[in-house]
Length: 252
Ligand SMILES: Nc1ncnc2c1ncn2[C@@H]1O[C@H](COP(=O)(O)OP(=O)(O)OP(=O)(O)O)[C@@H](O)[C@H]1O
Image (cartoon, rainbow, N blue to C red):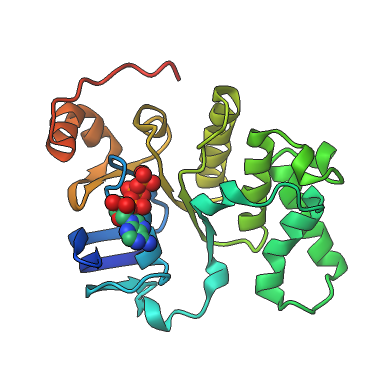
């Protein structure tokens, strides 16, 4: 059975001013993919995500979401997005874990609608899913970096999106929390059947959980199965990073 194409990027180019950041990008992301996007600093990864989500407009080319031009895409609740900016959320903001997660439902319901009993159950189930039940009434500022990150995952998940888009979610998180975070993503992918796009610098770690990899540095240097990427990693990375790369074992 053919899987549904969720995202189709065709011939996309984009510049900030006269600086070409993305050049003729083509890629398809299908239902059930867990795609890791890797590439050096400033290689255009976040920009590509923003163009896919319609937050930036490509200079040329097109993006389709579920078969429709992304400019006409209305069902935002089908996509959960965690931007790099989640890291800069004001942690002094006096909101509890429960309150932050519930903010993820207001987009779906409308700002002034009251939460029903069912909504409240969904919020609690999502907090349970990310293993923060013991902290549900704690202020977000009192949590560790890894726990805060789980709160943002829960906020993105609470509307039950089919696609989860994560931009560098492990920045500033310790190794132990990072490992349990990757396990959570595997559960979301394998058991909850989410399609996931994960941008990360941590190539060693992400290749242990993704099934597809795209390697980007202004252009796409590779887009295919994880196993094929791992087999040819050194050559692909050398090309993309434009200098010799020696792969180090990841103790993961
Ligand atoms: N708003 C902006 N205005 C001008 N230039 C920008 C803007 N945002 C990003 N850039 C530049 O565009 C290039 C691509 O940035 P982008 O954030 O997409 O890369 P990235 O691969 O996500 O980087 P990183 O891994 O460091 O987060 C970088 O050189 C960056 O400095």
